[in-house]
Image (cartoon, rainbow, N blue to C red):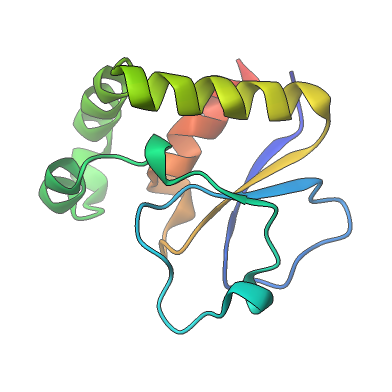
Length: 117
C-alpha cells in the first residue's frame, strides 16, 4: 500500500488527498465540521489521553512514544480502527488528518508508517 500522507486538519484540502480521515481523539479547536472537509473521524485509533499527555510532542520522547503507541494499537478497539484505515489505504490515496502542530512527530506519522509498510 502506498499513498498514505499526513496533513494538518487546518490546511486547505488538496485535490489528491483521496479519503480524508481525522485520527485525533478530540475535535480540533475552532474548526467546524464543514470546514474540516473530512470523510471520516476515526478517534478510536488515537493514543490514550495518558500517553498523549506524557508525550507532549517532545521530540526527545518520540521514539519511546512510538513504542508505547504501537503497543496501544494492539488493544482490540484500536486494532479494529487500524484495520479500517488499512482497508481505506488499500482502496486508494489516504490522508490522515491531525490538529497537531508537528505532524511529523505525531501519532498520525506513526500510523502512516504502519499503513505504508
